[in-house]
Length: 112
Image (cartoon, rainbow, N blue to C red; front, side):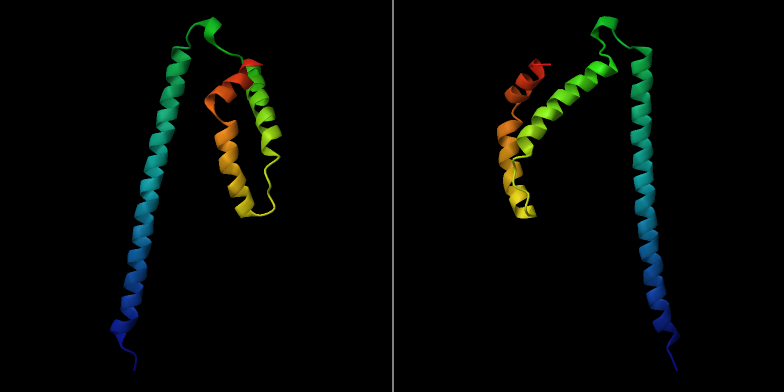
C-alpha cells in the first residue's frame, strides 16, 4: 500500500514552486507598470513643456542623423569575421573600441 504522506510531499513542493513563480511574475508586472507610468509621465511633461520651437528637431532630421550614423557603422562592421561565434566575439570587442569612440561618432555626425 502506498504511503499517503509520500504523495503529499511532491504536490506541496510543486505548489510552493508555483507560488514562488507567481510572486515573481507579480513583481515583474508591478515593475513594468512603474516603468510604463514613468514614461507616460515623461511624455505628458514633454507635451506640456515642449521647449523653444527652434530647438526641436523634426522626425525627418532625427531619422537622417540616425541613418548617417548607422550607414557608417555598417560599413565598418561588415568587415568583422562571422564564421562562428568565437570569431564574432573576438571581432566585436576591438570594433567597438576602434569605431565607437566619442570623437569618431562626433565626426560621423558632423557630416550630416
